[in-house]
Image 1 (tube, rainbow, N blue to C red):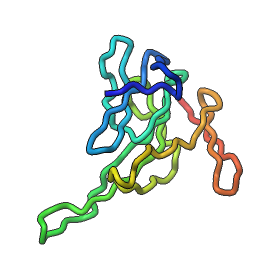
Image 2 (spheres, one colour; image 1 turned 60 degrees about the vertical axis):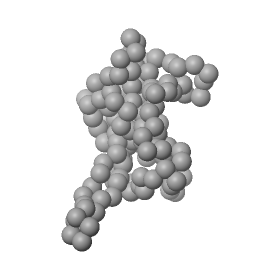
Image 3 (cartoon, one colour; image 1 turned 45 degrees about the vertical axis):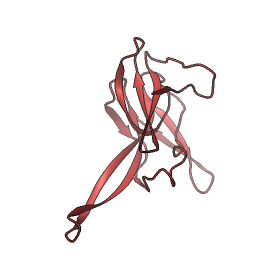
Length: 142
């Protein structure tokens, strides 16, 4: 398990949480520990920001079963992720992205975490630049 540091040379704690990373099958997953070093949110996200005002932006991964290959006796699956806002307990406050993005969950394809595209403007406002280079603003109600 490694601590994440927001491009600094030391781990930082915000809102009593610090980012951690853990490798599983060559893929990096993000989670959080508290100030005593106990894992409070298991590494399960494809990327994450530090908490600000009791909220963090994470890339929540979902495994979708599309069907079954009867010849192999296995499920046919694909993976997608959404940008979501979580509280310090890991509960989803809101979905920031309206549509999930498909992703190939393979260490040869996913060498770096996908980027987080939303930026916090205030505790309830988040911005993302769209394809036409205009800012999309999302207001999150409590």
